Picture 1 (tube, helix red, strand yellow):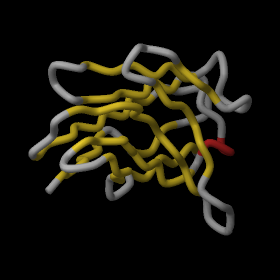
Picture 2 (cartoon, rainbow, N blue to C red):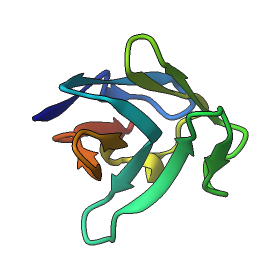
Picture 3 (tube, rainbow, N blue to C red):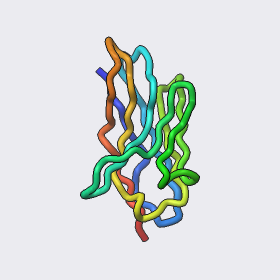
Picture 4 (tube, rainbow, N blue to C red):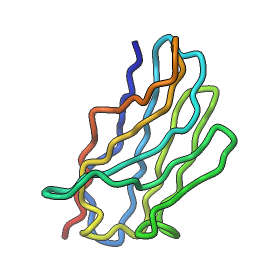
Amino acid sequence: QVQLVESGGGLVQPGGSLRLSCAASGSIISINAMGWYRQAPGKQRELVADITRGGSTTYADFVRGRFTISRDHAKNTVSLQMNSLKPEDTAVYYCYAKILLAMWNDYWGQGTQVTVSS
């Protein structure tokens, strides 16, 4: 089995910063892409950013220039540095990873709440 455990969410004022982290554990043979999605109340889950095993990154237009994704292959972790946060960034943020056990599958974390409010 695989577990993705997120940390780092919380309450922050507009313009502030937060750093989310996600660690994958289990009988992992390999990890391809890792990334972050978010879901605000009443909205669909949307991609925030992801990063391939080779280091290529994709960012949603609404976070480009403010958020930075990174990963540590040795520790099976992915992080999201979020700067210049806006109230519209308020959402539950989910970590995901495409992981090889006996076959490739997508795995998700339980989600961490990010609230941007004064």
